[in-house]
Image 1: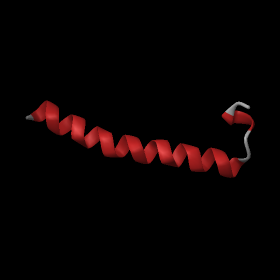
Image 2: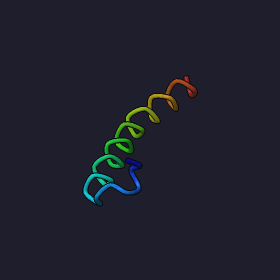
Image 3: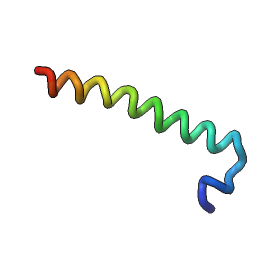
Length: 35
């Protein structure tokens, strides 16, 4: 089952989870580069 065929709710939950994870990683990476 591809995510594209999953119910909207599942897509939203998965997408939000991935986005939140990226938000946590991006700042850390930027800080490391700046330092």
